[in-house]
Image 1 (cartoon, helix red, strand yellow):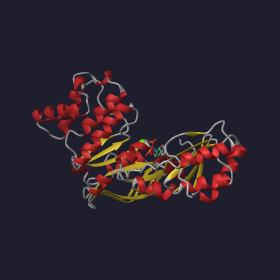
Image 2: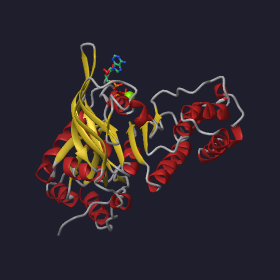
Image 3: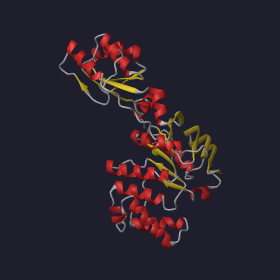
Length: 356
Ligand SMILES: Nc1ncnc2c1ncn2[C@@H]1O[C@H](COP(=O)(O)OP(=O)(O)OP(=O)(O)O)[C@@H](O)[C@H]1O
Ligand SMILES: [Mg+2]
């Protein structure tokens, strides 16, 4: 009989040992499997192959430091494309080049069919930019910030005021429209920067860590807004340190580190290809127990890792891990089976060492 382990639930067999533990283990293993939803399946279906941003051998140097080392990517019209990577990986450097905020050191970069270094003004008119830093004017009100920004795009004042009102509502900031920006919380300021980036209805929205510093409610609000924009056809390019954000929003992404692309694909593809479908998390009693369990499970394990005290075993068929552990009488006291996720991929690819 093939065992299927319990999913998404801490299985604590603490204090139960020997045959009773095994019996409980078998019982839990019989529970039905929860189907893992393929992320963004619906939106992925609406994509075209039409690239709006193409980078080939793209490089960025700051003096002797090469922050981006010859990367290639294509971003398609209407998709959400993510850049993931640890601190200092080169994400902002890349994003700033494609936003025409920083010159390309080498390689090719085309945005909307135009070379980034040459057609700066024409590209910026069609791009919305949310930088990593909140660069709004603290002395102006929210409404004034948006109206001043609209002047860069030569919008008529009536149209600008109406659009600004709509966007403040979209970001749930309308009740503060006449407050000075300096009085805003960090999360409100971030939402204002996003509202501002949309003033000229850009075709491509480029966001560098859009939700860093936001509370869970504000993060959900921003995710909802970005999904709504995507449904309306806006192409979205983002960087993020939140794996859940990338998993929810990105159709495709690249994982970068030290200025190079380590992997690319849809979040689900990356999970299946790099770590496998499921993660079995086990909390051994001590180092010897950990060694024993790891050894017993080895034939069924595709990849293993340690998260603090926990031993994490990845597999497409976690039931086989269960079988090995039962057969070798090495069933752990506490364990949990969960779907493998993008964070597992990220840590597997980029390691656990802290960056600069
Ligand atoms: N203006 C600059 N002058 C000199 N070095 C820079 C400059 N901007 C970035 N760097 C360096 O380039 C490298 C990549 O930085 P970048 O800001 O692109 O990383 P990042 O992936 O966005 O990191 P984070 O997740 O911390 O935002 C880092 O070593 C950084 O110190
Ligand atoms: Mg950055």
